[in-house]
Length: 238
Image (tube, rainbow, N blue to C red; front, side):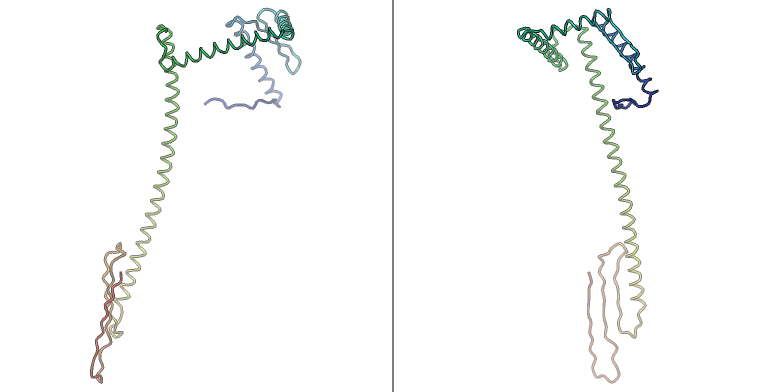
């Protein structure tokens, strides 16, 4: 993993500040030397530490760099309007050239305008495209991996919810079965003298919509009665 970004502000700890200054000073001096060698540039670098120590680097001599700096600064301030116009014209021409180079590079990356390129240029272009493809594929794989992890997490949550619902359904089924047993036992345990007999047609414990049939009969006739009446009621509960 790469290092996290540090906040660019004054380091309060004296020891850490001194260590950071030493490391970055060495790196800055090294970069200045490389710039002067690689680009044939005239570079002058002056550093004063917090304790007043001087560190410097000059590609030729510090005096010549400073003299050239003051000379260029005076020429810039004394620049006539015509010279200033020419300066900006040169800047515009330089920017147009950079834009043209970037447009040509973009076309080449798209596979266009390749007729003027040699084997070396084409190989370099191919390497650049392969590096770009590797970066794109890596980012794509990372996105797919994150999506798979998210889908897996949601699947686990749904699976857990299904388990809880299954437990609740089983509990309700068990309660319904117990309730039907109690009703059945109560109906079968009634005495004949009460004159009411209930018959139940109940299917298995999982069918909650099974019909229940009740048949009511009147009490038995007494000796002093001359006639009897029979009442039958058929009730069907759905």
